[in-house]
Image 1 (tube, rainbow, N blue to C red):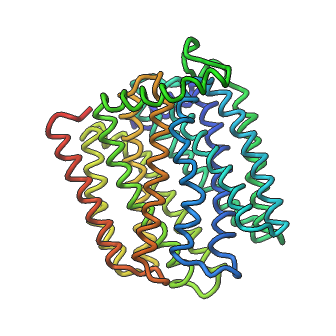
Image 2 (image 1 turned 135 degrees about the vertical axis):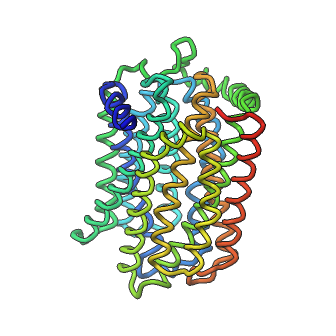
Length: 422
C-alpha cells in the first residue's frame, strides 16, 4: 500500500523520528495534564459544574494566551526552534509540578487557574513550534503524509496519556496531584528528547536568528504586521484557516455538550461520568487515527480543498443524525466520526499552510493558527453556555452546528471551483 510505503520511508528519516519523539512525549503529557484539569474542575464531587462554569474556565485558560500568541509567533521565527522545544518543555515540567502542589494545598481557585494558564500558554507555543519545524525534517513530496502521521500520532499520544491518567486516578489517593506530577515527568522527558537534534536543524535560517531578547522585542511588532501581510497574500492559507476555525468552533460546542451529558444525563456518579468521558475521548482518538490513514489517499483523489468539502459536508449530515437522540451509543459513534472529520480537515489545513507560507513566516502563521483555535473553542463554549440546559440536551445547538458545517462545505466547494485547489 502507498500509505505503508510512505510511512516506512518517513520513519527511516532520523530527524523526523527525533522530532516525532518530542511530539509524542509532549502531547502524552498534555493528555495527562488535561485529564487532571478536567477531573478537578468538572468532575470533583464538591463542584456543581454548569456550562457557564466550563466556559469561564476555558476563557481563563485560553483567552489570555490568545492576546500574546501572535507575538510569540515572532519568536518562533527569531529563535532556534529546537531551543524553544527544549526550554518550553522544561518550563512546563516546572509549572506542572507547581500545579500539583497547589492541588495538594487546596489553594484558591484563582491561584490554581493562574498555574494552569501558564502551562497551557507554553503548550500552545510548543505545538506551534512543532508544526513550523516539520517541513525542515521531511521533503515536500511527503509533507502530506508527515502531516497525517505526526499531528495524528501526537493526538493519539495525548489520548493514551489521558488513559494513563485515568489509571493513575484508580490507584492513587491524592489522584489529581499524582496525575499532574506524571504529566510533569513526561514534559521533562520531552525536553531531554529534543537534545538529540542539532540546535540549527529546525530553523529558522541562521541569518534570521536573533538570540538577544531586546532585539527580538524591538522587531516583534514589525514582524507581526509582516506576518499578517504575508498571510493576506497567501489566499489558499487564509481560506483554509478560516474554514478550520469554524470547524473548531463546532467541535468546541459539541465538546461542552458531551461534558454536560457525561456529567449529568448519562451517569449517576462523578466517577461514572468521568469514565464515559474517557471512553468518548478514546473513540474520538480512534477517529483521528483513521483520518491519518484515509487523508493521504483522499487528498490524492479530490485535492486538499475537495477533502475539506467532504469532511465538512459529512459532518453537516451525520452530526444531527447522531446527536439529536442524545443517547450514549449514537454520541459515541459521532465522537469517532467527528474525530475523523476534524483531524482530516486539520491535516489538509496544516499542509496548505506549510506549502503556501515561506519558512521565515511559518512560526507567526502557526501561532496565529493556534490563537484562532483557542478563540474559536472559547467562543463555542460561551455559545454553548447560553444554549445548553444543565443536562446538556439542546436541539438548537445541534442544529446550529450542522448549519455551520454546511456553510463551510459550501464555501470550500466554491473556492475549489474557482481554481483554489492545490
